[in-house]
Length: 126
Image (cartoon, rainbow, N blue to C red):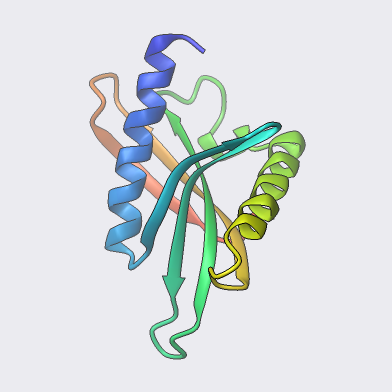
């Protein structure tokens, strides 16, 4: 991954964290890595009516053009398996976190200057 792609990804994650906070998510961890997988953002979402908490693992995909498809199209079978494995491992290492688990994705579109053009949360992608 070249430096500009890395910078684009980090920028997308910053936009995603701010967006998730505005949607009521409590971000508790970022960039969790293990052999064979990584999780961009880990958050807790609390249902406003039932007060039930869900531990949410979030994959962020950032693009500055549609040349290679939409950001969410980049989450294929192998990426999904790696996300599931990393999520299970994270939960084992943090047993006091909520038992309800979910994997979401955030699609971030930026222009060439890094300005946010569009952001979308897709819940329960697994």
